[in-house]
Every structure is written in C-alpha cells, then in structure tokens.
Length: 306
Image (cartoon, rainbow, N blue to C red):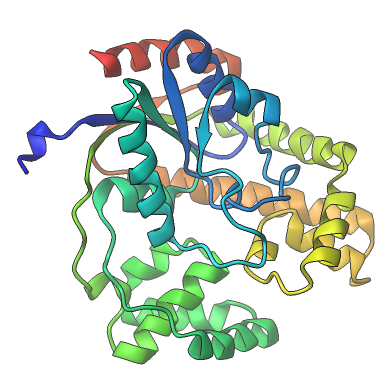
C-alpha cells in the first residue's frame, strides 16, 4: 500500500506526570474519539493506583482500549501491544471515530509508529536464567553485555529489566541483537504531540503524585496483588509496585519505600525526556504540561483532524 494513503493517527505522549490522561479526557468531551492506551503498566488488571489509571467512570465517559488486558501474572509483550493497538485503531476508524494514542511508554509508541524488529518467540528457560542473574547482580552485567553487542538496543531498553532480559535472551540464542532483525511495516501513519514542560515545572508534581498514590491506598493495592499473585515478576517491575513490595517483605521501612519511588519516578521521567528528544516521524513538541498545555493540545488535535 502507498504510505501516503494510510490514515494518520494522532499520538499524545510525553514524560510521566505531564497530564496526558486528563488532556485526552478533555478532548474526548469535545470530539468523537477513543483512546488507545500506550502505557505498559495499565494493561494489568488490579494495578490501578500505582499506574494512575483512569477511573471506571472516566473510561465510561471516553472509551479506552488496552487497559485491563491481562492479569499481573500473565505475559504481555510489545508484539501483543502492537497487535491489539492496531486492532483497536481499525475498529475505531470503522466506527467513524478518531483513534487517539495516549501514553508515555516510548518503546511501545516507537514500535507502533516506526515498526519493530521481528524477533523469534521467547525462550522461557533462557529468560529464567537471566532473571536469576538480575536478582543476584542487578541489571548492570546484562546491560553491559547488550551495550557491547548493540548500543542501539541498550539505549532502546531504557534500563527496563523485562526488555533487557528479552534483548539479551535473543542475543545469546541467535548471536544477533534485536536491532539486526528486519522490521515489520506499520499499518498506519502517525502524527505525534510530545508534552515538553520544563523540568522545574514537572519535578515537584512528580513528588506530589507519589504522595497522592499513598493517600489513595498504594500499599493496600500492592498487598492485595502479592496475595493474589505471588509470582508476578514482570508486573512487579513497575515503579511503585517494586518498592512497596520490598517494604511489605521487610526489606526496608515505608518512608524509604516512598523515597525510592520518588527517585525512580524522577529517573524514569528523565529517561523519557532523553527518549522523546529523538522521536522520529512527524513530531510537535509542546513546552507545557497539565492545564497550561490545553490550548496547544486542542489546536494540534484540530489540525490533526483536517
């Protein structure tokens, strides 16, 4: 198919805490749209507070796809995301609505919009050995191994343990890093808006966001998840869940868990700035977040509909 004939799908993204969810909901009150979530943690059922997942009422007001897709102990890959996202986009278009991709998981957005490398099926035994290594020594040895073979892949995994384990698994099994495999062609074209507020604006909001999660019951949420899913290593890698799980298992106190979540959230946001700074394709950077971004988001979305 001629690429120029493909539908153009708008994407609203940016670092965590910049107000993407609320801005998308405001757009949904004005336009016939459905949100295609591009958040690697919101796919898990029961993980609501730590992911800042939109409420059930909000999802009833504006239709959302790719939220509450799997249980916390189930596997969910970027390949699964692309398959479900493209299905949801096609369904939304067929209904005469606008699919709006919203989320901050840059790896998902990049794979969806630019194509991803077609890799062999995962090998659970090789991955299990790699996870044991991560538990004993942390992610640094595997990250260095991947960096030596492919700096591109080392940057792409963004220090995410799950993506790192998958990349090294492919490397060890095939002798080739993921970036050496051919790419699949995206089914649609994408026009991206990246919220890009100053760090001085975002940083204090991240700390307030973490405080709000504890007030809403993050500890109780993680406690319930651990009771229901003792073996949920992938989901537990999410920021907030890993740190609270450590507290509940007696590794440190609650205040240290809170501080660790703030540190991890800041580090994640900084990695997102680094990632999105190099975002390919048709990209607009909006130097605002939250309510301040609304006029720019509204104007951009109206242009995207033309």
